[in-house]
Length: 286
Image (cartoon, rainbow, N blue to C red; front, top):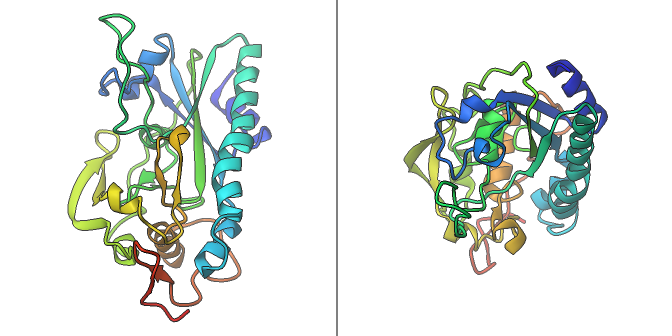
């Protein structure tokens, strides 16, 4: 088995993006988020992605349809059915070749209370691998200033899953940040001013860190501008790809020609609608 064979098979199962990183690339991480804590014999971490349909954001961007197309085909159905099926099929294929593979969803687990360790030498469950670090390490893209993951193929529009395997594969180079630069479109688009462009930090693989803005998650949770508030099963996260900040990011990337996927019409064709945290319309021509 080689890397090209794995990527070809993943594509046959529906993956639009595939990258491979060595588990050793995550050796700097604490045991609470280190993939080796889950599978000590693992050699490779495979990141697979499926694209979010560009059209699933059209109704959201027009302010006319907020809980149908994107919610299902861009989030819940996409993760729980289409991407899950791709991940499952690739996992079973690995097992048929005599290798173990641990399938993992790409959850945003930050700030979640951990349980009690099963023994003194073990990290507290649950250990979750940071999918953004994994995707960057696997060469697929970078973490944008708004905290969303960006790829040169689809911009903000993809969902990820991961597999840990004990097969040692040829790996991809870590992605060096180049997409999100000199742009505050996300912060400027947020009606609630939840993104502070003056307070920045670093996130990413060492040697390829990305500049990130400070995001007020409490304000994000009140967003009524296309954001999706998830339940306990997704750690109550606020899905921002469809929100004002995510849509502004996508539009900016496309306007600059930084996304390989091209479309007949521009994403933004009119003034963007905005609501305050009470749901009242502000600064709009609609």
